[in-house]
Amino acid sequence: MRGASEKVGLKRYSPSLLADLANIRSGGEILSPDSWRSAVERQVADSLRPEKSGNYSLANGSETKSFVEAAVAKVETAVKYHSRVCDFLRALKWNGVPGNTPLEQSANLLKLLSAKKGGEPSGEGETLPIFEEDAGDKTARELADVLDEVESLDKDEKDLLDPDEKENTNPPTAGSGQGESLHKMRIAEDFLSDRGKREMLRISRQLDTLSRMRVARETKFTPDPEGDDVRNRAIKNLGEVSRMAKPGWATYQKSRTYFWYQAVSGQLNVRERGIRSERKQLLYIIIDCSGSMEDTPNRIPRACGVLMNRLKAVLKGDAELYFRFFDTRLHEENHVSTSEEAKRAMEIVRNGSFSGGGTAIDSCARKALERIAEITKSGKHHKPELVIVSDGGDSVRLVPTDLGETKLHAFLVECDNRPLTDLAIKSGGVGIDRL
Image: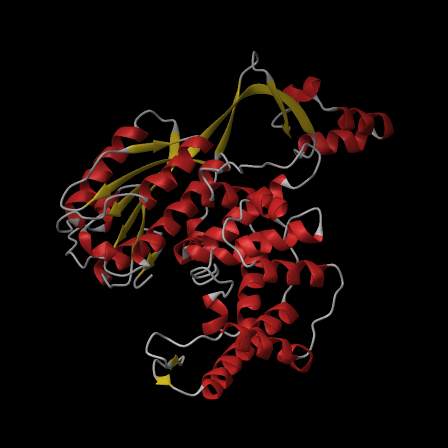
């Protein structure tokens, strides 16, 4: 057991639970309480000792002089605990749990459980607090839900949720096929220990469903006789017949009359050389870093979820992104155009300092628009978008004409700013209060 636990990086665990898990995974059965209750009673009788006062402590904090009363109470507590463990084992699903053997899978499952509050033994004993407090089947369902959610992640989501790609101290040998599974396990552990990451994913996926949030590259073809690219297009005049595509000449051989009809009516295709160029969409995000963003546990994760959604467009090669924190002023600008920069951006926001002063949405948005105008002068980008994420009700004096060609998206985290969200909708963007 020690070898398997060390292999997966499991430090504190209950050996008996690990053994039970391995037995169940190997095809063993879960025994009824009648078959193990007597063993629990013997264990309690052998281990029960009075305090220095001569009294026995009870679970409710009171004391008794009666050994029998103390033993009965402790047995009932132990039976309840073991029954919850049995419920956990009975409801357990192994889908998505990595490991080459039942013991390795069991160790990985315990490592996943240890990420949840109460999932590690307390003190010197083997008891897991989680089974003293929660129903076992509920815990098993939560693990299954997390593993299912992780299984549904696409590559971009996995990269953004686990940007560090923390190294496993004992990586699998080449060809074992476990690397991807272990990557998913790290994310699952994070989901259980940090609910904020699941909230980030929820927000990001919610925005994926909005058509106004879609991002796309612009591909442009400029005709040029010296160009390296070739495209087929409809014939414009009979002077282009010499550049006819092969299917057109096949038509000529079959029926000249029909051929000339197609040529005159523009139904034939000709080959054209040219230069193909692409422009990425420009995304500019300003994120409120005022102290109130830390007032509730969900505000920062939801802001991260908005950023994560936009970063996926960068990873797909459809956009280039700039983001900044703001309070009463705009802070340092961060540029994101590569996958590595996208991963780093997630860490910057998750670990950022949200202890700024007030919130000046209007003035900061105006400065961001000025910066967008500077960037788009190069002609390398198209369809600029400004995304504002804030929990502030700061007055906004911007009007649609101030935005120019920039589309505005506004996300108010757990608060309302109707003038701002209305402006975003008028610009063709998304405006959401109480995100």
